[in-house]
Structures are given as C-alpha cells and as structure tokens.
Amino acid sequence: MKSRSKPIPNIHALFLVIFIIFIQAKSSFAQEVDNERDFDYSPDGNKGPRKWGEIKKEWGACNNGDMQSPIDLSNERVVQISQPENMNFKASNATFKNRGHDIQIKWIGDAGSIFINDTVYRLRYAHWHSPSEHTINGIRYDMELHLVHLTEDPEVKIAVIEILYTIGKSDYFLSKLMTNISSMVGKRHVEMSLGIVDPNDIIIRSKRFYRYMGSLTIPPCTEGVIWTINKVVKSVSKDQVKLLREAVQDYAEENARPLQQINNRGVHLYNYGSDEME
Image (cartoon, rainbow, N blue to C red; front, top):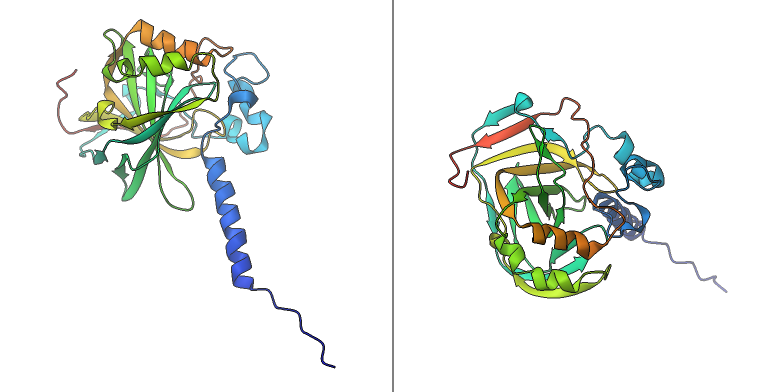
C-alpha cells in the first residue's frame, strides 16, 4: 500500500505572508501612537518627554535620534531656494477624535495630496499643539496645526505641513468646529463623524515656507519626516485655544514637545513670491 505524501508548503506564499506582516508592523511603528496612556508632557515625570525613549524599545529614537523635531528655525542657518509648491486638496468625509493628548481630524476618503521629491503624500490627519512646538528665531507662537500626509508605499513615508497661530481674531475653520470640540470635553478616545471637511478651509497657500528633515513629535519619534512650516502666521482666539486644551483635559497645561538639537541639519526657506497676508 502506497503511503500518502504530505503536501509541500508553498514557500513563495509563506514568504509573502511573512513579508506582509513585517511591513505592517514596520508601518505601524512609523506612525504616531494613537493612545496617550503610556506617555505625557510632564517635564519632570516618569512618562514625560525626557523619558519617552526609555518607555518602549521602539521609542528609542525619542532619546537617541539625531534628526528629532521640533527645532528652532533660525535665519542664521536657513538657505533660500526658489521652488513652487505642488499641492492639491479637496473636500472629503472626516471623523473627529479626542486622543487624550490632542484633538484629531481624520479624513476617510481622498482629501488630496502634496508632491515632494517625486513622491505623492496623501493627506490623512490634522491635530493641534499649544503652544507651538517649533519656534522661528526663538519666537514661540500660541498654537500650531499639523497636517499629516502619508505615502501609500508598503514602507510608509511621512510629510507634515505645519501652520502657526498667534492670538488675535478667531480662526475661521476652528469657528465651525467649536460645537464639536465642546462635545469632546472630558471624553477621551471618543470618535464622531464630521461629515465633509474641506482641507482648503485650513491650508495656507503660502509662497514662503521652511522645510527640513525631522521626526514625529510624539512617540515613536520616527525620523525621516519631511516638515514644511508656513512662514505666514494665522490668528486664533484665546477661547479657541483654551477650548482645545480643555477638551483633552490632560495632566499638562501644554501638549508641546521641547525643542530638539538641530545637529547640523539643513533648513531651507522656499521663496517664490511675496505673501499678501504678511
């Protein structure tokens, strides 16, 4: 009687499964932590910015990286370059979430993209920090907004557009969200639908902006992030900044990471015209 041979495993299929698992794990490490329970902004606490790199092995770059963000954008080290912007945004469905350390907008559909160095980065998220994390010539602003863009490559690449705010008139876009933000007060990790949100209501199409290579400003502090900081500064009311801070109700009065060492990195000022808003 002939013995029945065992099926030979498909090595190629097995390799593909392992590769997909590896890439998914690597991509998840690249993106921001979505839950603040393991870290905070307390300057002297065990979970504060000075300790982030010690909390988890995959957060090591927070303490040991040499391309960390935020930084001071000093004119002394800025090189001017003439190059037009290349961005295209459009209205799309979005959700609103209290992540505990910030309030986040997440676009569900295609909200458009930016094109940098022959690479397309698609808009995915937006969130606020107060006061600003980056400074310009030592000046710290009252708030900054991060618009986070990701590639669709297996190994996710990240680009962030940043908008700075100073206290003054109410911000038009935030004015439309005040009711939504108020409903988030004290409700961590709650997510709600916002309906259609147009990024063009937020974006400044500035003709002058800083750009440098840095990192995420919260764990895992992934490096290789392309930062674009608009030179035009928008206005925001004290009540709007206060409400964003009250909504998260965390342990800290601020959710801004301290400045990091620039370590001889190049900072470029892209300049292809004048801005009427300045």
